[in-house]
Image (cartoon, rainbow, N blue to C red; front, top):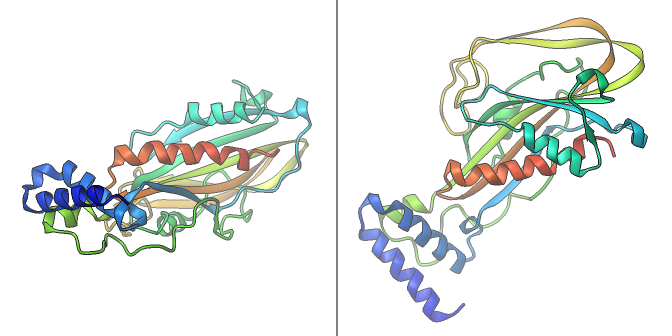
Length: 281
């Protein structure tokens, strides 16, 4: 890299080191600039997704059967609405999105349970695993399936927040800290059958919406916050022409001093990308 560019980045780092904490935005830019020089992978934004419970492998539908009803609910603390994103992603894959659930061959119901900061490099996996059953899914179908990384590998690379020559000052130390955000969403993919199917359906009752921890009563999330939430889970026998498969996805993003506002578009992009992996092709 050009020596003058390196010098400018280092000068900015020094200035940030002696500046007040009110200049955090400038410190973040300086830390990321210095990180690029030293090949720190966290200088640039990273994102990916982890299947906590992967989608079922279903037979490809006939063209006339590629109709889907899509709905979304949000019980997380964040202002999240994936309805339009999911519909547009399905349409882009050649699906006809219908407005009546009774007119659909497939029904995709999404429920965002958590959006918040998690431990760097975790992908939100431990929080997602601690959430237990997927409400509205059939018992015993993939609920504790193997984790499968759907996208980027985030387990290897440069050490968190380090750079050759050191980062100068408290401002740079804070600005170079890696922050990771995750959105955990449960999906129930219902497949139509001409003949009614009997199954056990999972149901749960939440005493409160998902908090910063995102899981269980008095558990700690990856980010260290504590939840005050109680959940009871049960199963009941049902007979229906729609068989419900449970899917759980954690979509994540990280970078040096990444804000929620920076993370959300990257996470939404990941969620949109995996719709084609949930709907049979």
